[in-house]
Image (cartoon, rainbow, N blue to C red):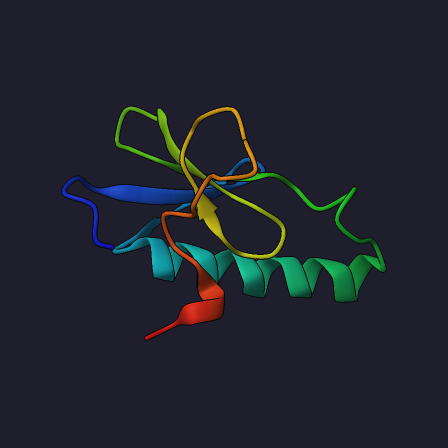
Length: 88
């Protein structure tokens, strides 16, 4: 999915412009792996990741596994906006 507005992946306090949810997921997964390798820490210590717009408003979130989710309270039937397990 390619959003209509300019989006950024925000990992902790750092923000990078991306062109799609797929690119945001890939960038987060690389940063997550590097962080884990350097620190030996896992999910509980990995900085949160969000996808934000120009105004800094969250438009989606990225879970530790790299999937992109809507900004909503999670429920078991929720589908990801981007699922990195099914890359086409």
